[in-house]
Length: 170
Image (cartoon, rainbow, N blue to C red; front, top):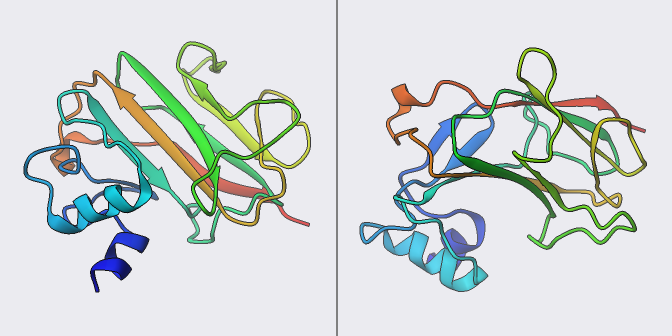
């Protein structure tokens, strides 16, 4: 049971905001045993609660798995933070090899529209704007890391996260 829990999730106490899920206590002394087992198994290093928070999305806003063979748009406002990153991984949690050597965006390099929204495109082929190559990986994991954020972990304090929309699929 422990292996199953650590293989599919990061334990209890998840915070869901739309399709984005975070485990605010995973980098703290109060992390539950399943969260600790998950991080030990994966080798990932959780962000400490005082440092920030990570949100993970594996599905679009219609509940479909994010598919790297499709064109997917991540659009909206990011929660307030001094710095943030958005990185995509294949279904096994590895960076996706690509000739553009682009694996993510940071808040300092992404282009925003007039309303302050970021629009990031996930696609196997080049796309105009903020584009991340998916290498045609069938399953994509998108991770937003917010560093030095005033956003608390109470559900009422987390107002919005970008929408994930499948735009076109072969």
